[in-house]
Amino acid sequence: MRILVTGGAGFIGSHIAEGLLEAGHEVAVLDNLSTGHRKNVPAAAKFYECDLRNDDLTRSTLRDFRPEAVSHQAAQASVAISVRDPRLDAAVNVLGGLNLLEACTEQGSQVRRFVFASTGGAIYGEVPAELRADEATVARPSSPYAIHKLAFEGLLACYRDTRNLPSTILRYANVYGPRQDPHGEAGVVAIFFAAALAGKKLRVNGRSQAGDAGCVRDYVYVADVVRANILALDGRVEQPIMNIGTGEATTTEELARGICQRLGVEQTFEYGVPRLGDLERSVLDASIAFRYIGTPVPLAEGLDRTKVFYTERRD
Ligand SMILES: NC(=O)c1ccc[n+]([C@@H]2O[C@H](COP(=O)([O-])OP(=O)(O)OC[C@H]3O[C@@H](n4cnc5c(N)ncnc54)[C@H](O)[C@@H]3O)[C@@H](O)[C@H]2O)c1
Image 1 (cartoon, rainbow, N blue to C red):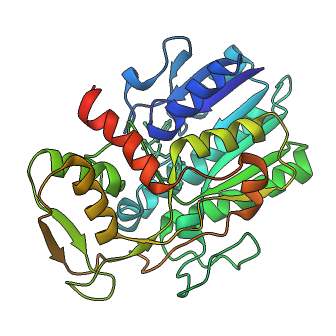
Image 2 (image 1 turned 60 degrees about the horizontal axis):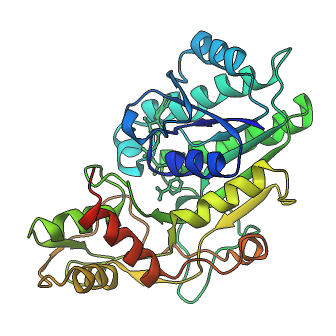
């Protein structure tokens, strides 16, 4: 199949592009390189430097590559930036996405399947202690980022019904793994690996106050996200919406300890106040996804694999 991966110069998209090439597909990447890097794009993939906010360029990219399926990973992907600049978030995540949907459904388009990177980590809002949010949990997005992701999910349902564009929505938990950018505001695993290797203190922001063990998250290894994308692009996922996570709850402090232990560095943390807009607890019920992708990679194993990247293959 000819598959277009938007955001394929970024962390998750580049892994999906690689996985699709390994599975024998023809792959092109569309990316504006705002947070992604040209070196992340696999050599065997065609590359289109294109901003989704540019309607004409988006259309001409799709006309040129003529994809049969699209994995839409490109996004303004930071909750914090969306709070500071909600217009930017809407411009990329809603209007840019709409340009892509229009290009996918214009006359002559061969796109038969559309897979969307949504957010399980932000869309459900606070997940109470001991519970996990499944796909039937009512969405309670509280940041512009999550609100816009939910809006785009609604647009996909509309294009499914009115333009005959089949789609699968994958709601990711907190994704981590090799190539995640440690310089952004999101991606605590990458930030902690980089800080620990540089001999800096790891900052644990409080969950309800400075000094506690920090927020609770569900950390999912990027390979599981790739597997889910490939199955969905193949049309093998029946559900229109599927959570991608592990169901395991981990505090920021537990994560920090695990990373320091692996690197054999002293555990020196600084404890900050809660960050504005951060959810206290987010854990997903991803049991539907387990039926497709099997048991997810445990955090300990995922951190071991990630460590190899940060310590041996830094590029
Ligand atoms: N990383 C996570 O934990 C996580 C969790 C839930 C959902 N997601 C979603 O997964 C997707 C990939 O996230 P990531 O962590 O790899 O982020 P990333 O920032 O590494 O990748 C996003 C890519 O999109 C590109 N991009 C941004 N704006 C664009 C535009 N206007 N036009 C074209 N390309 C543009 C960037 O250059 C980058 O390469 C995003 O949709 C994100 O919202 C990520």
